[in-house]
Image (cartoon, rainbow, N blue to C red; front, side, top):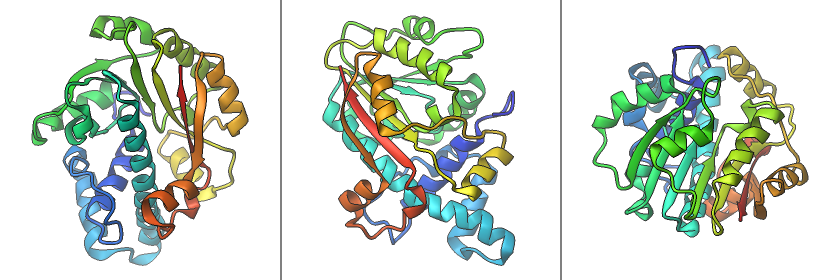
Length: 277
């Protein structure tokens, strides 16, 4: 991401959820927080795509990508929501929270301490727009972190995270933008702060050749750096005392939430591992 600016991938992901929220082709999905968390220019684009679809070559490429992403984001979001509900932990830590609205829309987070960890630039923009949302369901603590100056352990200690009780961790849409060394360093901190009964939900990418997706991410300055096979991800999580209980991909989520009817084949490289201590 560009210094001083919120993450553009966070905005793109939130735009996908906003489009999915009012898409009659996706009646199984709802995220009423997404639109309110978008910057104004992104809201304008969402409204244009809703009303006009894709017209012209540029729109077919850019807005077509966004429309496809909306189906993919709906499936990914629903799978993670289910895992959070099943974890039933008293603490939730969202690593690289971006424009996540779960603390404002998931009833399962009532009485849960929610820690949103992110870069100060992205988090600052989000906090400016949070007043447009209804009151949070979870007890939200914003945890800004610049990893060049502070560690995850330091900022979570300061924020009041209790390492003695179970935590559900969400690592969604982040690790693919990190080097393996950076991922391992953060994972080690997560492992040390995870009491028995904790859950880690990590979204990662396998190696793929989706040229348009990779090009768009590179053009906005947030290129994909790393990829894992399920076996590699399992080994990495095991090094931090997490045992993978479930590792699934887009086809599995499509069947579970959309009876196989959603057009999500372009997201076939996305996977989510759910691991527990």
